[in-house]
Amino acid sequence: MDNLVRKFTDEEKRLTTEQTHTRRTYLIRNDLVDRLEAEAKQHSRGWPTRLINGLLESYFADLDGSGKR
Image (cartoon, rainbow, N blue to C red; front, side, top):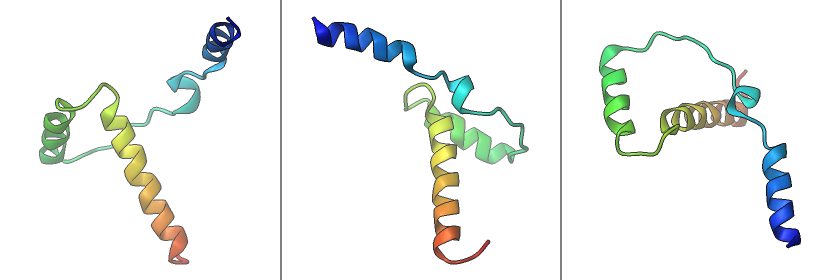
């Protein structure tokens, strides 16, 4: 029973995407948008956001690791 109560309590504490992310508008080449949308159809909802965030994390990790700023 404690696990069930904890589960619902934990869910209430979860932050929404709007609380952890910021919307921005960027221009992306049409051919890349087409490929992104085609690929996204093969994945779950939210995949493009996870992909873009992952690519940015990787870029900045590489940048930080190389000593560039």
